[in-house]
Image (cartoon, rainbow, N blue to C red; front, side, top):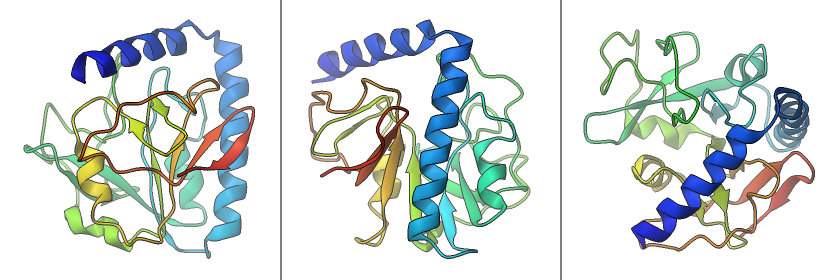
Length: 206
């Protein structure tokens, strides 16, 4: 199972990195427009949204202002912070410490303050803070047609998503060609309820 997932990860990462700067920018604008439209339909002003800060070749990494700041104009935005056991704590936009740099193939679904932990974070809300979220935006490398998300293998998001209320939408931001991919499912996997791709916008899954 691990070998199969690693092979799919490697292929998708190479495809992402091969995109031209212009193609990334065009794709990111389309993804953001679809995300903004979706949240405007399903959330009230001021609702809590769990999001992340993309880097490198991840979808929406070229946007300026970045996704958290764009969302913070209308919502309370929670950003993830990795804990020593790989679980996720949460911090509110404006109080997190940024990574100064991230390699092209880094996994930036978490806001790191160093190799691990919360040292230097101005304020964290605890792992249970995700229960407040009315919507969750997650990173991913691929999603199957049943909603199984391929991450980087750390299991951080699967643990966090297990704390959500059952009616909360969980949306993965993907590149074109990363949805409806055969992703082997494991018992701990938590499915997403939708994906956004540049070409198709928001698509309900699961």
